[in-house]
Image 1 (cartoon, one colour):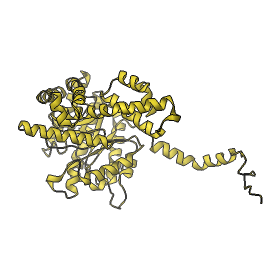
Image 2 (cartoon, rainbow, N blue to C red):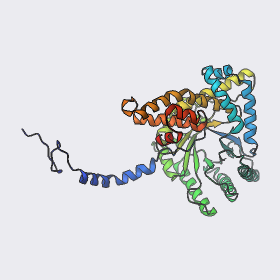
Image 3 (cartoon, one colour):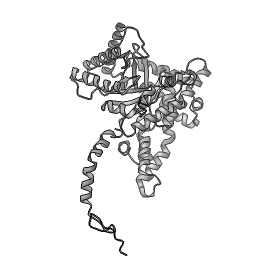
Image 4 (spheres, helix red, strand yellow):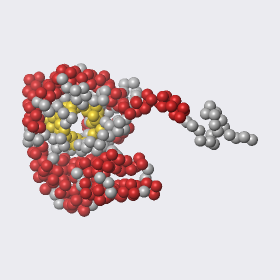
Length: 425
């Protein structure tokens, strides 16, 4: 019996058919989908992501804010500054704490704040238009001066009041006043970021994109100059009113302007009816929201930022160490779950932010680097898939970019340059 199968290609499947006509038709059929995937899922751009965002109340910023926070954090670090004490707080071996300690000291002395938000929402409250107008103008002027003097954090901006009806007018007024001021002062660059809070409907994100477009035209800016973060702090920003996952619709409504999603721990858990003593970053309700956010932005280039804990390191020595230990555990937990940025609300939290982050990357660096090196030398003999290698390269890249490992360590351990790992990841 002849088992050769023939079809429209006119050849048997056991032959080597000429499939150029088939590929031409497939390419035509898939062209729109190819464009959509390329547009919606461009991947990570490789630009270093801040490992934290520091929030301070509106009206309190000055050019000295970062150095002041750094000095306070350094004083706290010295109080727990032995490798033994730091290891206990971080829950890591003493040798690893000893490697991390000088890096934390250097970071606190040179760049204690990577990303800053001056808060004109909950952190400012309702003080009246005159007080808020003055505080916004003062903040813009001080940020402009700091940027001119090289004293501003690498990225900075404001959180304004939401676009819900009750706060819409005040929120738009603060946002436009701030953007106008920093634009006229010549510092409205990619370093500037504004935060849209309390989103309860996709129309609010679309409205935000409209405001950005209006401001750009009014100020003669290039389209797309103004980008923003969406603060995810309401159940409606996770599951829409019609029962669908809301996050993809929010990103689409942002029209390419959304840089990141920031989880709001306390507003979100409170909105879910969780009692105050149990509202936390590691509550199951928080994990659900963050899992939805994570899968929704995968491959889009939109970044994620975890929330905060308001259990600050203050009080007795025991209370301070307990709060530092909690913060270190939560930072480590976020990193393990793929959230590489989080909020810090108190100078003392900088100690454990940097210490826990550096320890995380140094602890995983050499095993990751060894696997990369073996794969690069002979992919066929490696047990790792290309996707795993990309993830390992991303891990090493983040460790290098945040200062946990050095360029020399990367080259020696992987046999590749940091630049090559950025491309690989």
